[in-house]
Length: 89
Image 1 (cartoon, rainbow, N blue to C red):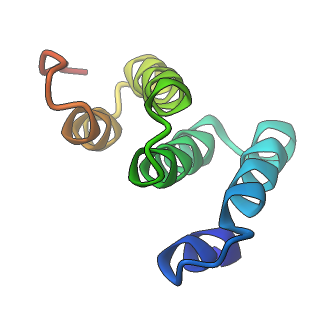
Image 2 (image 1 turned 90 degrees about the vertical axis):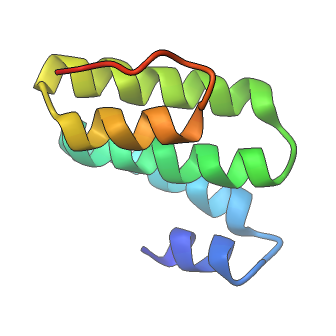
């Protein structure tokens, strides 16, 4: 949550905080929470103009959403990549 708030507030350390948060989610979180963390990080990267790693994070989150059959995750990922076809769980 702190990393998300840092990004929202325009803190220059937000990128590093989001990267660290995703790392912690990979080690200790659930796939569901990891997917949301990836999408938070992707949004930050897109707003920073760094689209290639953002696309990779969105794709990973979409893969998790498909595996979990979680339509809200798929919808969120789809909204972040408008050119991608709509995916159903």
